[in-house]
Amino acid sequence: MQVTPTVSLEIGKKKFFATAEVMLEPEEITNLLEFRLKKHPLIVGLILKMDGVGFHPDHARLLEYSRRLAFAVLTPLA
View 1 (cartoon, rainbow, N blue to C red):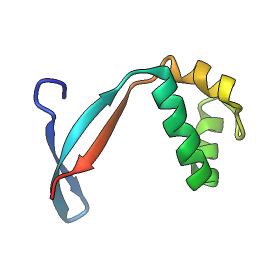
View 2 (cartoon, rainbow, N blue to C red):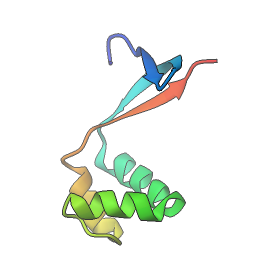
View 3 (cartoon, rainbow, N blue to C red):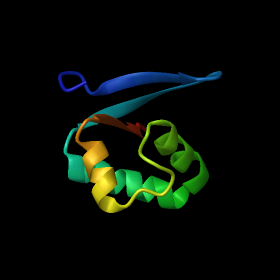
């Protein structure tokens, strides 16, 4: 993804292209997780709980968890 950041996606019958950005910094990942947790508390909380982090983790716990993650942020191309 770092060499060729344009990716093609297929979700159901819908196909589109996006730019992929690799996110490796724990603080950035933590901020994204906190944002997603506020927007979708049930589903993100359940995912975190299933991964052993807990349903309502604090910032420090999310930061510890984020140190072992890498994210790909996909931005659809117009």
